[in-house]
Amino acid sequence: MPATAPRKQPGSLGDRAAEDLRFIRDAMARSTTFTAVPGVGGAAMGAIGLAAAIVASRQPTHDRWLVTWLVAAAVAAAAGTWGIVAKAKRAGLPLNGSTARNFGIGLMAPLAAGAAITYALWTVGAYNLMPAVWLLLYGTGVLVGGVFTVPVVRLTGALFMVFGFAAVLMPPEFGNLWLGAGFGVLQLGGGVFIARRHGG
Image (cartoon, rainbow, N blue to C red; front, side, top):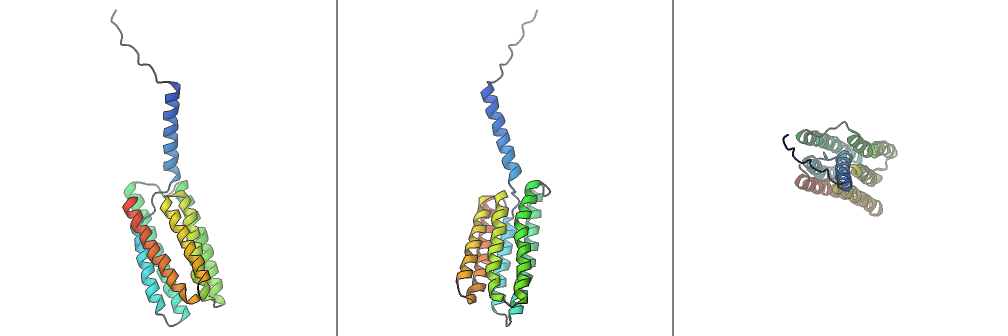
């Protein structure tokens, strides 16, 4: 009768449990982090914000100042959306999962509130309050949405809120400057950082 090879002894129960826990932890980290936040798209949004700050500062009326920023916001939103879709496609990441959905809700809810408040401020001519409102609510959206993505996004959102508080405390004539610092410089810097550290 031929000799049989000795059977390989299974690993200890503790080793298998530790391996299973590592697998579960890694799977949960992948499923709860939205990694399609665009670096290049964010940098493009920052460039648009810088241009908007310069153009808006030269407008002769409050209404034209407002239109300049609203057009810039629409163009920047398109650039950001393109950046997310392109990055997700390159990385093979789904955009219809619960994590992407939670990121979108966390970001969009404060922006929708900002649109309504902007309209209300426009009806009473309170243009000087708009910069603080925009910075605070955009920062809130980025901070809340950032819970589902990389830490630098949360930091960016918090800094937007700091700029918003500064816009509240500083004289109204500095409002456009704070918008340029936030939607321009800060957005551009965050986008470049994400592009270099988190894959474009």
